[in-house]
Every structure is written in C-alpha cells, then in structure tokens.
Length: 591
Image (cartoon, rainbow, N blue to C red; front, top):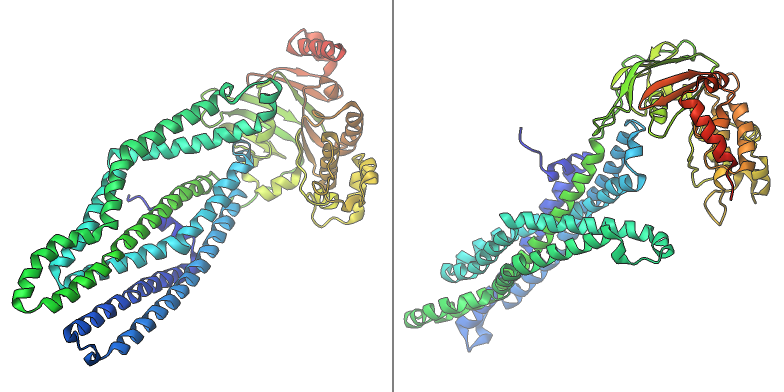
C-alpha cells in the first residue's frame, strides 16, 4: 500500500474548505503569471525604442505598454491578495478542524493514556502542531504553486526570443538545483535529520534544566554538572558544525553564486552572438533581447529563493503532521453496540492479568477477588505491587490483558463509557482544580446541580472554612488574583465534587497523601460521608486509614499475598504485619 504523504493527510482536515484551498492555489498561480507581463512590456518597449533610435519620437505604443504593465501589476497584486484570503481562511479552518478532531479523539482514548502523555506534550503535539500547519496552507503552498507556474512561464519565455541566451540563463537554475540536491539528498539528508533531532533534544534538555534550577542552585552546581543538558549541547554543536561546515558550506556557496550571478552566464553567449548579429544587420534586435534577458535573469534567483523558503515550510509542516498523527493514532476504548446494565454494585476481578505497553513484566498476574455492594476493601502493599493498576482497571483507565473486571455482574468492556463513568467516582492523591470558580469546580461532577446542592456537598466535604475565607465565597475563581488553595484544601474540594456526583462505586487512591494533620482529620470526616452505603476501593500507604476496612488485600508483585481484616492480618505474621510494624515505627520517629 502506498504511503500517504503528509500534505494529503493535511488536506483531509480541510473538510468543506478544500475547494477554497485549491481556488487560492489557482489564483496564486494566475497572480504570478500576471506579474511577469511587465517584463514582457519592458522588452517590447526596448525593442521599439532601439528599432527607431535615435528618432525616439517615432516610437509608437509606448504609453500602451506602460498601461498594460501597470494594469497587469495591479491585477496581479489584487489576485494574489484574493488568493491569500482564500488560503488563510482555509488554513484557519483546517487548524480548527485538527484541534476539534484531536480533542474528539482524545475523549475516546483510555484515561490511562494521559498518565503516559503529559498535558503539555499533548498540547504541543496538537495545538502547537496545528498552528504550524497554518503557515503551510496560508502561505507556503500558494508560494510553491505560484512559483512553479512562474518558473514554467519563465522557461517558455526564455526560449521565445533567443533560445541561446535563454539556455544560458537557465544554466544558473540547473547549477543551483544540482547544488541543493547534493546538499539535501543522499547521505547528507541523514546528517540533516540527525542535526534536527539534536536540536530538539537540546531544547528538551534545556527545559528540564530550567525546571530543575532550584535543585541546581541549592547544591551549588553549574550547568556542567547537569549531564543531560551538557551532552545535548555538545551533540548539537557537533552536528551543527558537521552540517554547516562539511555539508552546507560549499554547495550553498555555489547555489548563491549561481542564482545571484545568473547574468554572468549570459556574457560568453552574448559575446559569441554579437558579431553575427552585427554582420547580419540584426544588432538592434540582439541588444533588445540581451537587455530583456539581463533584466529577466533576476527572476531566477527570486523564484529559487521562494521555493527554498516554501520547502522549509513544507518540512516543518511534515514534522507537525507526524506529531498530530501520534495523537490521532492513540488507541481508543472499544464500545459495545448495546450497553450492558449492571445489576447491583459488586466489583469482581476474575483471573485478571495486565501488562503495560512496552513492558515484559506483568503488573498484575491472575488476580481474583470480589467486593460486595456496600463493602469497603483496601488495597495495600509495597510500591509497585499493583494497587493503583488494579484500581485503574475498574473504570477502564486501561483494559485488562487477560481475564475480566465486572461491575454488577457485567464486564466493564460491555458497559458504555457514559454508563460506567456515572457509576464510579474517583478521588486521587493529586486532584486538579480548574481555573474557574469553586462553584463550577464542584459542579463539574454534575453540571445541572443547583447552588444549594453544591453548598451541601461542600459542607459534607468539610469545606466551609475554605469558603468563609474566600473573598467571593463559592464564586471565587481559583488560580487568579492570588487565590490559591493548599494541597489539603484542594483535596477537600475534590471530595465535594465526588460527594455531589453520588456514584455508587468509589475509588480512593491515596486520598490523604498530601494532607497535613489538620486537613487529614477533615478529609477523613468527608470520606466517611462520601462512602456511606457505597462500594469502596481504597488504596493507601498510611495504614491507619484502612484499619476499619471490611477487608484488606495485600498486593505484592501483582499478586494477592494476604487478605483479611486488620486484626486478622496483624496476627498472621506475614507482609501486612511487617508493614504495620514499620508504619508505627515511622509515625513515632522524630528529630
């Protein structure tokens, strides 16, 4: 199957504006051809003047040539303006379509995808790359098509008046193209690709270094101690020297010399033709032709420069499309044709195994357990044991590799995402609040909730002390004008959101991890209100928070190694007993 080009992929996003894009390209070509008419008028003017010299008053149509040149130049400008209007409108709509389709696609991917792909990177891939395509569609494509039309017209004109001087002028273009092909093609293309990769790597390392500046300063280090940044700079320096000195210097010098000195190619040919023209009585015509080609040769350098500029834009757009495709090719969650409806709120794992993409070691292996409706089950164990992974399979952050996860007796794969999300509420250790009001932050869980319902949820989440100190109460916008909340306060607002949602299944992932003692007490009260009568899956490292759980599952290396109540597990002398002992020693430790 033939590989689809980046340009054809980009044109697929134009939608109903594809015709407008092609219209803009056609008008650009017409405008470029119109821009050449004044040169022909100059030749006709010189021909007529030379033919009657020195009796210039006998020359006819002088004003006519001038008006034709003026009108064609103005027409070319107006047509080119219309062309750019078409391409700009199409470019803006295309970029908008890319963003909309990208966001629509991201809404269908597993939520775990966002753990592996940071929001900043996704924004750069989608929003930033879409912006880069605007230049290609709005300017570069129009310039390429217009320049190609101008170049073809130039070749035709070069051979209309005197093919020998025309061929001499085109020699400059031939030399320039050969130099560019040598510079950009073959093994040099690989070096240039490595140079661009090194440039990107240096940019990433530089960003990382700036973000780590506080650590660098605290430990009195310098840039040379930051190995990744230093290595990236050295690699870029080596690649840049190789590209600029060994690859580009000589070919680019030849290219610029040929294009800027195209007139020089005509001199030997003119010296060869002049004696014959003088002897044959056609010297006046020869002078007119020579003057025409001397003026017209300047178009060659202009055309080649525009092609190089447009080609650079095409390369950038190609890179941008590859970044966009990484988002568009992200796997989406499968959706059942008809959604199953869970009967009850039991959560069951049946022989579940799961391996993260790119890993050879399973995160979970043959995991089986059941959480009855209204029961609270805690998942504990050493870091990397599989606790968060197990919990993330319930709302389909990821799909299981083997086995089944069921809610109310129905495989979660057979429940539509909307129905599944309505049944589950989450409280993570690092909840994000939107840069909007407290009211809208809480209402995100239930968009049609009234202010009274939001206030009741905030009160249940122990947030009234937060509301009382804010300048505009629940209408205070978070993240602006210096209004910020601490980690524990943000956690309580997130709990209010979960309380408002009132879902029957609750997933708590280290809900008190970043809370100070005062906030932890309030969060525990809010959690008690949130989990009343609900099916609860609780992940915790602070073992004091799971003492009252109906059942505790101890996970290690993706397997259940122990299960039971807190008191029963303490007496088993297993991993949980050791963890409990270590936890109590850590709590009592002080300086």
